[in-house]
Length: 254
Image (cartoon, rainbow, N blue to C red; front, side):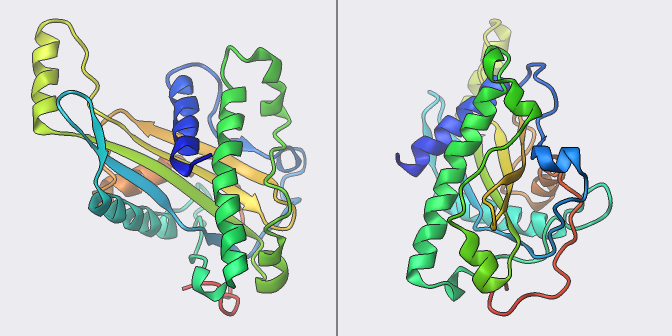
């Protein structure tokens, strides 16, 4: 399945959840909930960030602007490297250095980043109020990517990785004007949104230790550093209180 389609499915699942009383959006692996501190992780890195920024025309057509996507990805990376959890600990202290991996290892990494999108979409869909048969998964959250990334633990000493996906839809001036006219006639014209999705993966087991998302109805702008930092802080609510890397392992970070 193409990456963009998987991302669309994930964002659609989040869109269905937005505004409904499905409980807290942050999910923790059941082992962490049952025994807090049972899975201490010291070497946690930020995985390659993937954010798409679109411009939405007057007629509602979305077109990605690559330059904006690049800016947004850099802003998200910077925000996650300085954002802190409620205990004052950094989410991560460094990024994974993909250049230090072999070609085969990079391919495996890309496959699992794509797999994360599908798994996260399934987890969010199961949390929807209409899917009552699957709500037990929210209490016994045990999603996994499998052990395919165990080489990052074995070969490079990295315990876990923080995966971040996002989408930002920016309205043109024409669409904003259409929205103003729509209000006069009682018609609602969506002006876009900003969405970030985050997941923490244990490389040794593949377990998805934490999953969360945050959605802004148009107030945020991932092209702006300050706005991105605010959204990143919202995303990290419920992030496990993990020990950040004290000393970078050789050839694994920048």
